[in-house]
Image 1: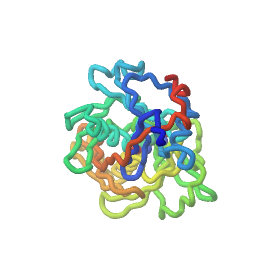
Image 2: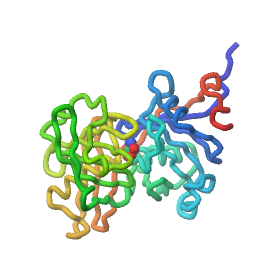
Image 3: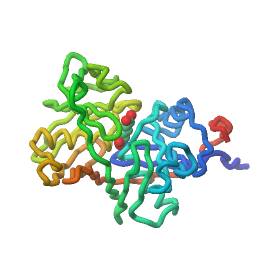
Image 4: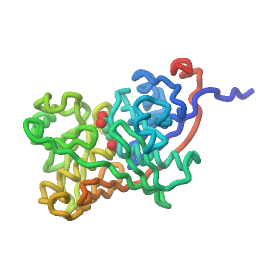
Length: 297
Ligand SMILES: N[C@H](CCC[C@H](N)C(=O)O)C(=O)O
């Protein structure tokens, strides 16, 4: 006799192979401990993902209520280790694709609440999604730059804040970053009191770069949307572009190990990122493995 799985619905999705466990929780009644998130993101014993996107109505959680007049849904993003992060660019694309897939919206322009504020996603007929990623902040003063170390090698890095922190290091060859099994050393640590994502960048041609990324709380991933935006802005400034100052938008192609992103910094400073977003599968988390009671249900 088949025993139907009775438990928690979930979906899997990815954007340029930055993959996520998607947990619908419209009324916000799940309590997700870091340990439970880590179990769900475990690639062997769990569902597997670089992170988790909990889908909650803005008016159903304290962090979202202030945004409820501008967005219906809040993306509660968690890293694979269970830590909370302010924003996830690939995640917003997948989140918007999920809302459409689940019939929770019939708009193709969707405002999404995040810990970094409201981000707007535009769905295209193929699997592409364009997200307004906000404006890049380049801190000045002591926290503007850092030194990034992997093994015996150290590089200068530019601090770029996309709502979450990034240390962007231009290197001669992406292989020089080694296996990236551990977090690169970043000094001074005071520049990043809550840790940071670290990107290594090489040029591929005019307005065309490629990166590898070690993500805070997730390790090396195949892509990082906020990281790709941080890299684009760092490369644009290195190349003498400052759209707000010179009134000219600039677009870069950013290749990540999991695919390609097109990123534009507009004359108003808004950074727009376009890339794919795919819903791969949906299923049920068996209560024998994760009792909803562990989630406060
Ligand atoms: N993968 C995400 C970034 C997650 C950043 C997270 N690791 C952090 O701690 O900031 C993205 O596509 O933007």
